[in-house]
Image 1 (cartoon, rainbow, N blue to C red):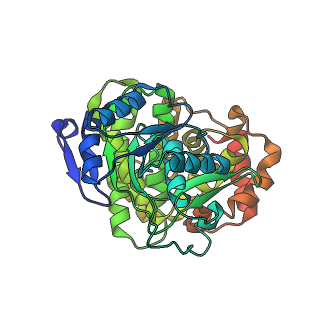
Image 2 (image 1 turned 90 degrees about the vertical axis):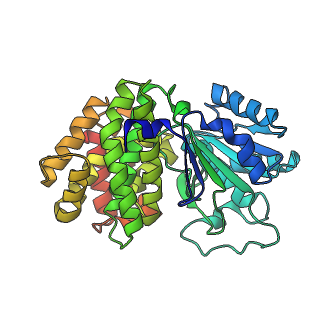
Length: 391
């Protein structure tokens, strides 16, 4: 890749149709027309509804003669009743598609609405760990376009949605193999206005995706290749994107790296995400920030027995000391430079939750693909480390 690569329009067909380029949101009308979409529901989170990219998106659709309405009742950690409200908005407006725009919460909300809006199936029946619900082929899921405005979540190419069951205080991974993204629009200009802290938090989220996916003990060379390329891009551009927010090359590199990291975790994730999901469900913490704090503790648990994969990741991240301690030290230096808190207690997570969170995390789909086996006691120890002093 050259400097100019991140300033050009590029179309990719894997794993879904992807439209990349600065200002690429301007093509949303033609993308909708090619998909025969006439009246989409725009879904975003509460914090994004007044941001300029929402108005721009609505205006672009209108100028191409495409009707749309906005649904923005999605929390930073989406909850079940918000998905039901989104389904009602979709049906009341006679919409024919959904455009999810924003960070991971908005896009997860959009996907969860897609799962349930055209059927009577209970939302929680789509839990990844349950049998796949039977969906009527004559009443398919709506067409779905994803537009990320952060470089971190990687939610734009895969159909899983993380949603909180407020009664159980747990997050669940919801999915159906027949829900496919119709198009993803990667426009780095949309990420330029992201504050430095959110740029850092979402960026480390992408870093964590790539690391956890790569060390999942499964043979999936496509996901592994995406993970390594994601690490190269994130290692090169994350600090620059935070410290030089107008740098479009860095913003583009991070957006592509985040997307690749999202592709890679189709292989699975690990204990960082299992813990972070359940902490987010209980304490409504920002997902990327929670991952960033927990990451060193889980790396100390996983990396000593993963020499070959650790060496490959160190090479991708340009880490010279490829020992477990050397690798983790470089990650911690990066976290320090990004002003990531050193413990979960700094973001309001109390020590007395450790056993409860550990029990819940063991039920998370990400726990089953961690490369080093562990039980609730092991997870409790990791959580307590992260609460007291993660690094």
